[in-house]
Amino acid sequence: MKKVTTSTLLKMKQQSEKISALTAYDASFSKLFDEQGIDVLLIGDSLGMVLQGCDDTLGVSIDDVAYHTRAVRKGVERAFVIADMPFMSYSTPEQTYLNAAKLMAAGASMVKLEGGRWLLESIKGLNERGVPVCGHLGLTPQSVHVFGGFKVQGRDDLQAEQMLEQAKEMAAAGIQLLVLECVPTELAGAISQAVDIPVIGIGAGAETDGQILVMHDMFGISANYMPKFSKNYLQETGDMRTAVSQYIEEVKDGSFPSEAHSFSK
Ligand code: KIV
Ligand code: NA
Image 1 (cartoon, rainbow, N blue to C red):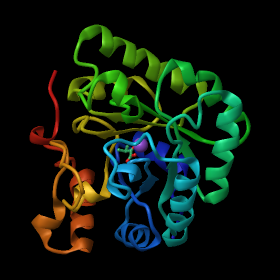
Image 2: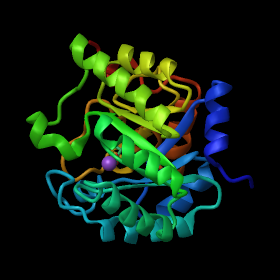
Image 3: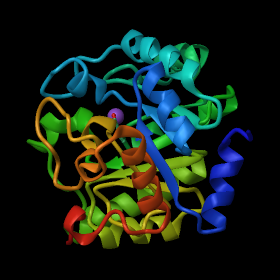
């Protein structure tokens, strides 16, 4: 089985094949997702919410993410594995490199950082040191207290323009993938067209190059609440394997997300 790499993901964008992604936190689920043909698995700092039961992601440590990355890696043969850098683990370039090294050593093939322009030096430095980087713009949950809640981002024109500019600058600095979370469909589509790298959306409409969901939301079993943009595939299908393959199928054929699972301006 051919492993998914950064080259595979880039080629998928170029050939307009949608990228399917889920979060995963352990070997049993990562194996199940991998066997169903998921393209990308993310060890998200969402683990603070769905595994640890917290109200936000701020309490997650680099060791938490490394622990779950080691477990996920063991279940995976084909999918591309990305690990989240948690809150305040990448506040300076120096600190970023040391913490990224822990996640790569644990089995990640790329690290994800939340934020825009302030990360340009770290993105470039990580690349030079052999670490591929995924950006994350829009609703960046580590900034929930700055936003004043989990809110759709990029609804006004100035904010939208700034997001587009930052996406371009980060692509130029070397990110090889970008996650857009909770942004209006039209803006996410414009950003996906404006950059050459693949863009993966969550609550960002159907015009991105791929989709990601938190696995617990996709199964409808999250401890806290179910976001509007998510869909309960377990309820629809009745078993986990079929739920995952249906999710992948709907991402691939563009039927997920529908307008009901997206945000307008
Ligand atoms: O932590 C996470 O699960 C994420 C995804 C929602 C993109 O960052
Ligand atoms: Na995250």
